[in-house]
Length: 235
Image (tube, rainbow, N blue to C red; front, top):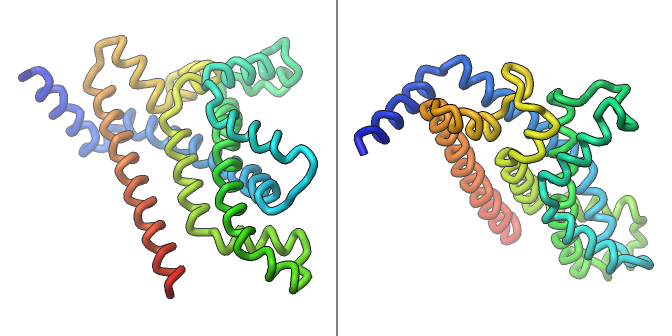
């Protein structure tokens, strides 16, 4: 028991002292994850809004696919991206394997279906409320999607935060395509796995505390956004 508290105290010390190695890993993790979530939102928000706002042939199939892809196994995504970016793959000439860019690609693929599926549900609910008004005003497709996305902005911020939470905790795909290379592609989750196996529990636990802190901040942000959305609805 004393050993646990000693390791915890050393871990907290690493965080409070802004240990350079720790901050480098945290910084890379956040850069990769934030970039992936932004790209996923650029793809997933319009896609989800399009599926949620309009009826078209094959729409039920698209809905099923989006919902199914929310549960994509990270290691499968990592393997597919690895094969695409490897020297013998179609994109091997770009030399992206074992770089932060490869990790961003993998995380974007994982998060985009989540963003799209959740956006579809939010927009579909709003479309049911506004369908008559859109029809009476003759609102075009582009303006309709823009209006729905704007009106759902608080809920969609929550969607983006959910995507961030999924991406920042991911380990399998980024381990495969990033290689967990020190000072290059070593992020929080892969470092925790590596350092635990090496017995360097202080750094592993410090990163675990940071991840837990991020989870708490994300949940607080989600609750705050939901409260803001409720206040805006009744304003």
